[in-house]
Amino acid sequence: MPQIKNIELAQREMFTPAEELLQRYDAARVDHLLRLRDMYNWMLSNPSERDRKFVDVFTGKYGICETAAYSDLALIKQLIPALAPASREFYRKQVSEMLLETYNMAKARKDTKAMAMAAKELGKVNRVDLEDEKALPYDDIVIQPFTPSSDPTIIGLKVIPNLEEVKARLRKQMAIDNPDIEDIEFEPADLEEESLFPSEQEENGKDILQ
Image (cartoon, rainbow, N blue to C red; front, side, top):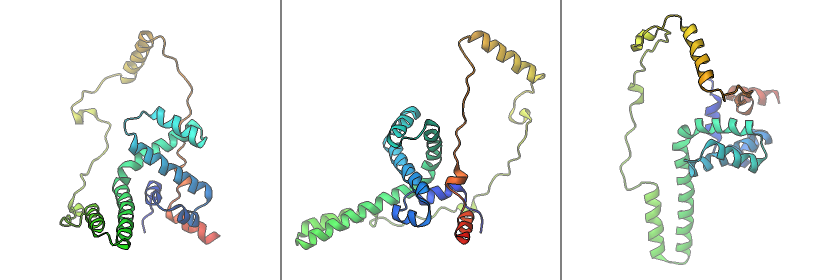
């Protein structure tokens, strides 16, 4: 069985109920998953907000440092495209359950008009009035055999002789043109994906040891 990537594990567990997560993972990991879920929903509701706003909101809400917030932000940006179908299915299930509850309440009151409206909306949410979509033939897609190369002429660019000297001259000129620019220290964000979202094989090994 091929090893499941950490990002795929986060994707798979994003909408899992908390009580089920607690049965499989430790409390710290569950708390992080729930925080990611909150961040994911916030990103969907605020698609035009800047990264700085995201960091300010969640450092204040969860008491985490900026490095952790930026780490989570990077993970959320990877998850959003992958989770879009799962997210729609998650909310469709919630709406379906609410409409079904509404239908049952209307049935208990013998309110046929409300029953019909709830049934109509339930069918619309689950698209039962439309024909099933045909699956795309992904298996027929042929992956292009790309080969990495450091030769710029392949894409129509000319080779620059003495490239390192040119780069040094440009850096020196930019420093003269922009005297206010200063080198600053920075700390790269540590996503900690290996420890937060271990592979399925690692999880199975942990269970065996326990």
